[in-house]
Image 1: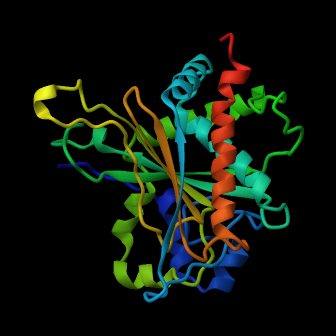
Image 2 (image 1 turned 180 degrees about the vertical axis):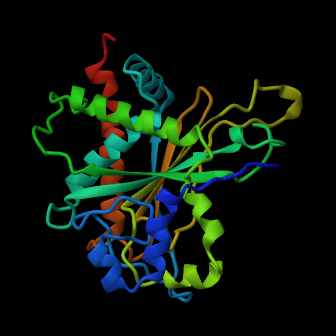
Amino acid sequence: MAGRLSISWSYLLSPLLGAYLPSFVANSLGIRASATPEADDQWAGNKTFFDPGAYQTRLAVVSIENGHVQKILQQCRKHDVKFTGLLHQLIVQALSKEVSPEKAGCFVSQTAVDLRSHLTGITDSDMALCPTAYYELFTRTVQGDTSKESNPMTEAFWDAARLTTKNLAQCAGTLNDQPVGLLAYLRDMYPWTRGQVGKRRECSYELSNIMSFNPGPFKAEKRWHIESMIFSQPANVGSGCLNFNVVSRYQGDLAIVISWQAGALDVQDEQSFAENVGNHIATSLQSFDFFHADA
């Protein structure tokens, strides 16, 4: 497997200098030890922490029936939007309802992106880990009429989803100036990773969409068949407050698992908070039947 993650000087200098300059110098120059967008009022939950004896992953699960999924994808194609771009807008709407303006004026997202198409010696059928990440800052949405008759998918909604779709495609289309390429400039991974504990989280949430899995047609002689899919990951101490893990079975239901590190969210009842976020997303996805019945 081969592929060169080239890093330009303009992309490298800010995080490199930010990592080694004293903080008062870096801050005065506007230099940050990160390639991610940042805002003073972004939702970041509690600072990163790790207690091996108390480390826990918590989950909330959302399931969307295939009938809804097909209508959603139809509307995505109509608006030239990929499902991941759409889902970011729904997540931001849900978080804007659940997180107070005092805690969140905006949300910074991290999206997992697969670079395997640019690497020689690896195919779509191979098991491989070829990720990078795309980051985007979203302002919180204005909460207006939330009744069933009020369509949350405005033109501004679709425009924003379309822009995210375009930016994700650009990120996935190159090996140049990828965040994962900056790891080559770390002297020692372990001390750097350990040093992230106790710091502010760089992003509000992470979205990983591994899309649709097609097990092929059912064959009775095989005696078993995959009817549904679910995907999750353990809580990432150094990642965002919430992880949204998305997968579906081809012509089957869609599953969204919301995972987080217990104690990371800076809310009174984390389970209810995550379930409410999931319910907002599910309601919005299912509303495509109501708002686009004649589409």
